[in-house]
Image (tube, rainbow, N blue to C red):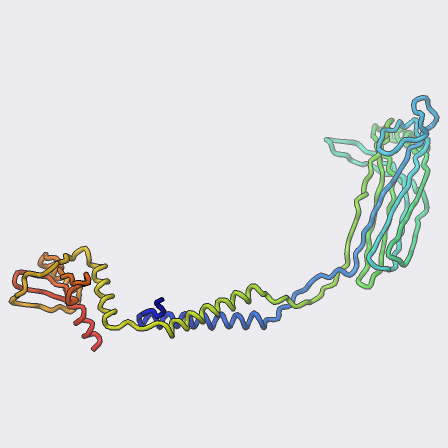
Length: 355
């Protein structure tokens, strides 16, 4: 297997410079990557919490000839005239990740709202509130706090209020009835205060038939975080790439320095001949032998370009003889013009340049 490779001096110097610069740059990046101490800020969760809310209700009926049941479950249509009372059960729960002081302030209401719908937009004119209980407060030191309230609410009072409001206002509007729990929960942690207001309810348009919808029941979650500075892990992939580049550059540089040799004279002559044939081959004619051996005048030219000029001037082709190795015999290209011979010898030209 051929190990050594011939390379021109200029190319060898250029390759050595490029590979040396690449090796130095790659080693520098290896050092920088390995020694670089980057820091990053992270949000560390110190405390998290969740709030869940729900209202369960049953609609109890007056004695009637239509329904056999004493009450109706959630999600149905309820004739207003047959409603005796509504049993409401409010469930609120706060759950945190650590034991901390938790305080809740809340109150339950019945609200009547007067509204009209204009261009498919509901516009509330006014709202009247009727507390179901006094404002309540509860405070514990625990991971969780739960509140459960239950009320039996008769609709008679609110039906009377709606009828009186219609008569006093003298305008035709509709009414909503809303059963809500509202308040604020607070948790005091070592990492800051949690304050969450809440309001959830069931509501229905106060028509002759009611159908209640639940609002604000979505669970609420949150967290308290602290900034923490941490070192960035070493980029192993980037380091491996730089090490690989360094290794390849080092091996290539050693190969160039150890296993490449400069062109000898014969190599330079052959390369020059091939270059001439590549650039001017279309203007040349190859001879098996040259029968015209004697010339009165022989002009030896300095360069192939000079021979090309002579060829153009006298309109004669550039000739050369092929030797046994299918190369240019005696390394000479020439142009014949009668008894005049214009020739260019590649070897002589290179030897003169060496001198």
